[in-house]
Length: 80
Image 1: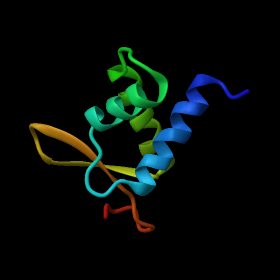
Image 2: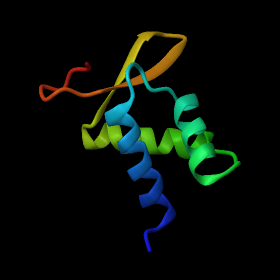
Image 3: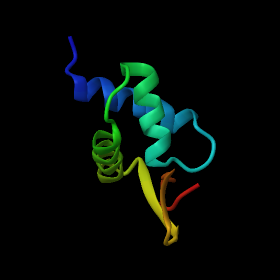
């Protein structure tokens, strides 16, 4: 059986590949709530998004200083 972190990251990677547009912490919290049940998901969502940035799957889009979101990285390291 997979551990909870692997299960969350797998669900998030699937979301990233299918989601159109920016991915926010709120989008990830909603995914986790629907997939794994109610809970306090904000910290885990932020942690997992940072993990995917570190892996190079996502890039941070901080073009709006009041809103942090993430986008699927292209091969050259820029966002789509």
